[in-house]
Image (cartoon, rainbow, N blue to C red; front, side, top):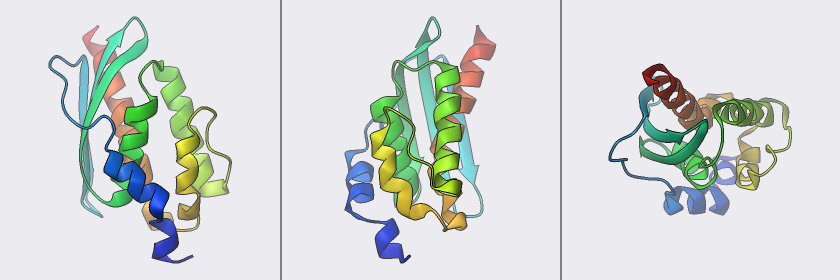
Length: 143
């Protein structure tokens, strides 16, 4: 599969939508994760009420895939519980590695199906999810 198929219009649209881009005034948790192999960097911030995400924001310096994945998170993760985010993150890995369907309720992730078979790009998609999980752990430590 060519790079053109990986970076198709749906990925470009997600990256350009940049849902969730920005910063929170008073986040409960924050995490910065980078991938020194490719240069992608993600800072993720979350606010929680009870056990649910009430707000999140991200800043991404990275490739189209990384930016698109962060945008999906910005669109879908508010309202989720940490254990649901863990399941979604695991589902993303299954989708990339084994061509599993995207996690339920996160249909935009189907845009990443062409990434299957391009192992060097898997971490580009997973990095924002790793940052979100780390931000949720940081929020839990503060409580």
